[in-house]
Length: 217
Length: 217
Image (cartoon, rainbow over all chains, first blue to last red; front, side):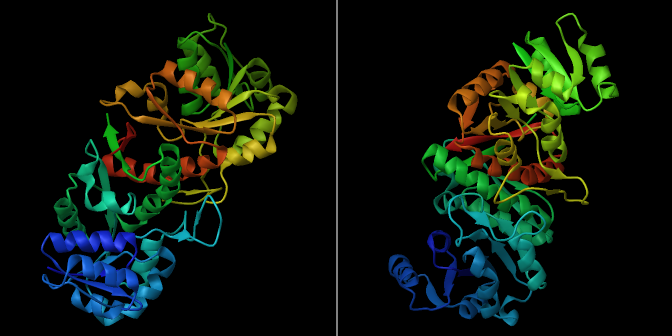
C-alpha cells in the first residue's frame, strides 16, 4: 500500500522503516526534503522498494494512508503544507504528542484536558479520518511491541469505524495483539494526557522500553 | 494504628472499612458528622474495634496516618477545617482526583498539566508528608487489588521517602504487590492526568474493575 509518513524524527523514521519492511511503498514527508534525518533514513532503507523522501504535500499526495509523526507543535502547520486536496478523505494515524518544548522539566502539554491535538487536527481538517494511536509508547515499541515480555495494550480513538479498522490492521502487522478501541476522538485527551504519566514511568524505570497492559476483572 | 480517613464517599468508606478489617482504629472525618454516608458506614463496621465518625478535625487529630478521600474540589477546604495543628508532621495518603464536576462529559480536571492537586496540598500544608497513591483505580480495586486476574501496578509519588514506605506498607496490607515509586510529588501530575484515560477505559470496557500493569523490556 502507498503510505505517507509526515515527520523525520525518531518516530517517523521508525514507522517508515517498519512499513517498508512490511512491503509498503513509503514517502517520508518533511518541510525540507534535504533534511539530513530524511536523507539518512532513505540511505538506510534504500530505494529498491519505492521508498522516497518528499515534501509534506508529496507524502500526503502519495499516501492512501497517512501517518502524522511530526512534533505536536508542528502538526497543524505540517498538515496545512500537505494541502487539503492531498488529505481529502484519507485515514490519518495521529501518533504525535502535544509536548510543549518551551517549558522546562517536567514538560507540559500545549493542548490538554478539554481538548486534544487529535481533536484539533480533526476539526481543522474535517475530511481526514483521524485515528489517534501509538502515541502512548516509545518509537521502538510502536513498531515492535513483541520485544516486551508480555502482551501489552494499544489504544485507538477516532470517529470513523472503518478508519479504526484500517489502523488496527497496521497495528497488527507491527505485532500488536491487544488493541482497545476507546471510542470517539475525544478519547484522544486521555491518550495524550497519559504522556505525563509515561514520562514519570520512564524516569522511575530508567528505560523507554515499556508499556501498560490493561487487566480487567 | 490510629488512622483518620477524610471523606465519606465510596472511596472513603471502602478504605475506612478495609482499614478496620485490618485492625486499625479508624475515625472517619466529615464536614457534618450527621452525614448519612458516615452513619451508614459506622453502622456497617460497628464500634467494637474503636471505629467512629467525627469532624475533619477529629479525624485528623485521631490519626497518626491520614487519608484524603474527599472530592478533589473540596480537599483543600477539608484540610483547612482539619486544622494545621492536627495535620502537623503526619503522612497523608492523597487518593483524590481533581475532577471538575461543573462541566459535562467528558469531565475535565480542575488542576492539570503544570500543577496537581497533590502539589497544591503539599504547598498549602508544608508540614504534611503527602503521598499520592490509589487515585488510579476504582474504590473496590484500591482495597482489594487481588480481585483482578493478574498482578497490576500501583504508583506512589511524594517528597518523603519514609512516608512513601509507610504508604507502601498500607498498600501491601491491602494486597498490592507491584508498587512503583514515581519519585517526587510532581509525578502526581501524571497520576492525576491518567484519570482521563481511565474514564475512557471504563467506558470502553463497561466496568470499573480494571487496572494497568506496567510491563518493561
